[in-house]
Length: 481
Image (tube, rainbow, N blue to C red):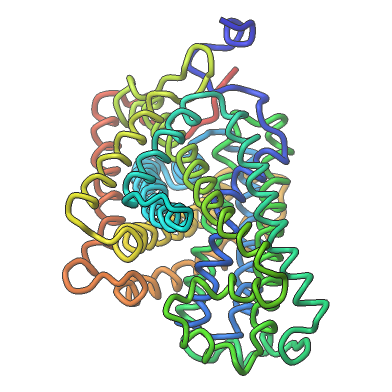
């Protein structure tokens, strides 16, 4: 056993493991930038507001920066790997904390397992081009096994792998961006995608939802508070860096994608493609050459793998903290004696992923149109619900615990973002069938899972209050050294 593990407190995550860069890349990899650019952006343009999608990215980036102000202000008072759950417990009470914990476990599980479907399909397509033909679910199970090993080990190993993969993703897209910028695109550079008429054209509400889905993962910076070096500095910086790096990258790339196709030609081009997710690769062939397109197709798969690894780490920490604080069985809330990783929670998540992927495979359901679309839309709804809860929790926490922070950070901006998120939640719920492709009863049941998770969390918190009032009161509290 290493000296580090011998000296560390029992049942604690690995302290001082992650700096600003490591946490930033951990959460950016969850947002899966190449996946969002190649998959989400063309679909958002097609189903949403066309060239105005770039302007929508700008609006969502600003909203998330406003959200980050209150989120960061409160992060200095939380210091718990439960993140949203800890925010809810500290600001709105332990019952709200219990509900939020189960929504988090549902949401990040749904995102990780849903992306496994797209990862399996994309990997099968990639290897089929090289003469290796295997069903999608074989590749998904291989990915589950690899993620299980990395999630079981210390977190800094995952961070190093994710940093390399994310840098490669950014590099290939930036090469294409520069190529389009140098040539001036199809008909010259244009600011039209940022005009109000373009932003509000088509179905702007659906465009907003696609933009939010592309950012899912940035909010996970606080999950790593217990493992960060100097968390009061590291976590806030990583949060702001993440929003800016993701937002500026998406906005710039969406603008250049529209310019590359031609602002007026964009929608007809997308409508003429049998698969809109090939749009970025077509632009790459046109402006940068087939070699870059081939590199993109490989990195598209690695982007998905980076995403599932990052979400695995996130959900494992939520499960671990819920066990450590007795909301779930305490046997779950333990860390590995050597790696100081939440190994039991990690194994539970891996088994759950294998079961769900296996179920979809046995039933013959489509890995993209069913597994990916259904589950990732549930996850997006769940995360935005938690953002709304966190915004309200910030307001209530600072009302009960006045601090040196000014009212703009602790009340005004969190209050405004809370209202904005409630509107967005409404838009997701009423558009869920169209967004996810789930019709009839399924279109009601899937978003209803978020409510079901909240009710289960309330019941678990109520049970904890009855059997251990002290543990119930301490839900979401920072750990003491």
